[in-house]
View 1 (cartoon, rainbow over the protein chains, first blue to last red):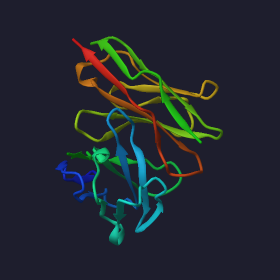
View 2 (cartoon, rainbow over the protein chains, first blue to last red):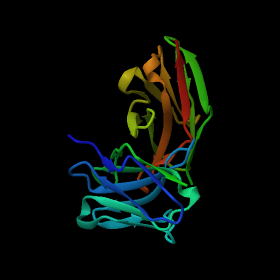
View 3 (cartoon, one colour):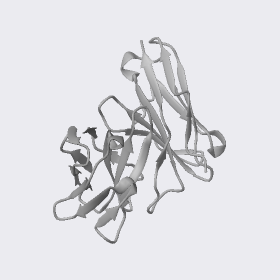
View 4 (tube, rainbow over the protein chains, first blue to last red):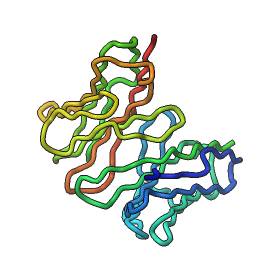
Length: 115
Length: 114
């Protein structure tokens, strides 16, 4: 079974430029998460999807960040415009469903450097 | 609100020595607890989990953890470490019957020296 796939693995951009990250969850997993991991910190949830619906986006900075999960499978996270402080690792995770004892499986992440 | 505290940011040990990585959580309700490992430039991999039942949980790569409700702790242990165990370890908690949100600690960098 393929794991969570993220691309690109690395991205270097200049500040004020837009950037997008893509995530393909494990087949059959209805729930998808985007996390932000700053250097030396644990991951922090940005947004959670149940199928196509964003059910928890309270930590997503909506002035510059947006996300979508069309068709309830792949997801894209976008930043426009990027700022220096956005340099971090963006992790995608998926789980079989909401509630109960579900386990979140993580992708390898996209490491963003904003210059 | 729940929170997770990893008491040591860095733990250096020699190969074949035992190790304990400490984790404490705070929550007014019951939680599920997890340990994840992150190797350099990789994502997080689940080491073990406590969902219910026995408080001693065994995971992959010879790791185990013990849930202690009275101490609100979930310390990770391994009796004999290898060089390949060098990585960042994250403790995480999720409320039972609540949000799906995983709350992570800041991580502990384990370095195993020859």
